[in-house]
Image 1 (cartoon, rainbow, N blue to C red):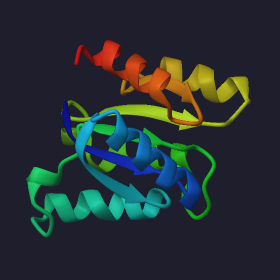
Image 2 (cartoon, rainbow, N blue to C red):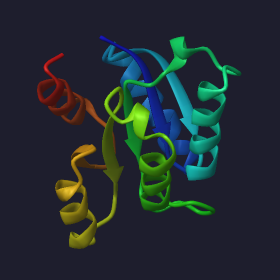
Image 3 (cartoon, rainbow, N blue to C red):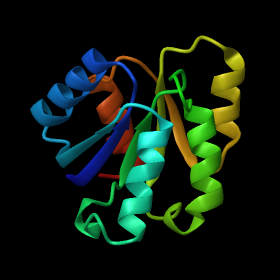
Length: 135
């Protein structure tokens, strides 16, 4: 079981459904939600400066791509640039409804992204994540 998952998605219904699936399948102990990349970057800044305990560090990030303010790719680039020291400790899974083949190709070519998963998060996706991470 994973301790903490960070779900980055602007859609509240998606966040609720992600939470239900993560809880029902006993995938993690804690779920943290961010509704865009800016909120997610703020979360990591708070972790880094001690405002949030490292006990809440997310081992897994589920990252939507299409969000307002700061989309998934902008978050990803900022995360790599500003929090490179966290890259080894967290596994990023793109969780998107994007049908753009460029998004999937880019995700597959980024060493810090484990996999591109199609929304919605469900039992099949969680089994794939577990298998890819050996948990």
